Amino acid sequence: MLILQVLRSFLFGLIFTLISVSITAVLAYPIQQVYHTISNLKENSALIAIVLVSVISISVWHHLSWGQPYFTFELLTLFLMSLVGNFDTMTGRIPVHFLILGLVLGLLFGLEKKQFFAHVIGGLSYLVLSIVIYLTGQYYAQQVLNYKESKVVFGLGDVYASGGVGFMLGFSSGTIVLILTLILAVLFAGVKSIHTGEEFLKKSVLLGPSFFLATALLFVVR
Image 1 (cartoon, rainbow, N blue to C red):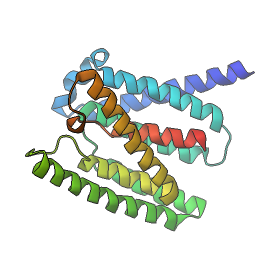
Image 2 (image 1 turned 90 degrees about the horizontal axis):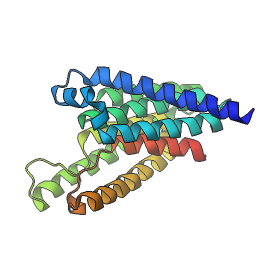
Image 3 (image 1 turned 90 degrees about the vertical axis):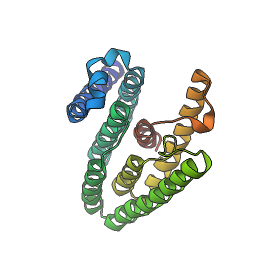
Image 4 (image 1 turned 180 degrees about the horizontal axis):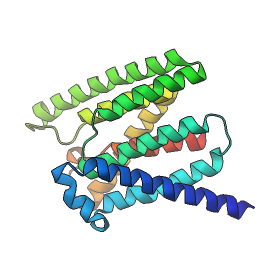
């Protein structure tokens, strides 16, 4: 019985990931810069890595959460954050559409769970906080690192992702995800810095995959 449950969860994680990557590829296709990436998936180690992480994390989450309260809410949240992670990996950007979808889902979640204001406060709080981080990062990149355009700090797409997470998860859970995201981003930057030999503080890291993995970790451990 346990083997069948594990197999069911693995198949769910695999299908979930394939659907997410396929939808992302369709959405990203019009962007000229990613055409080569999509047509040469096997050469994109970053995308392959997030696919593997997605299959594993979703399989574990499904096995532990099947039949639990709010399973559907968590599934929708994970799917949206999976799209965020995939899109950021493929294109290097997170469109504002994900913030809008996060807002809509968050308001629906809040109404259903009778925690409407917690979700609104969470979304607005992290939207404002992420804007402050974004502006501070822009100042640091331009004034300290002498970059005309910021390449290494919190981007505008990360503002959209932060706001979307806040709306979907509310204030308390959103705080955990945001902290985990930043920790994971620092760890990934450190690993990439060691691997490539580039200076740590000047290493660019995509936050989209970290947002997805942080959300999955939250749902798995709580």
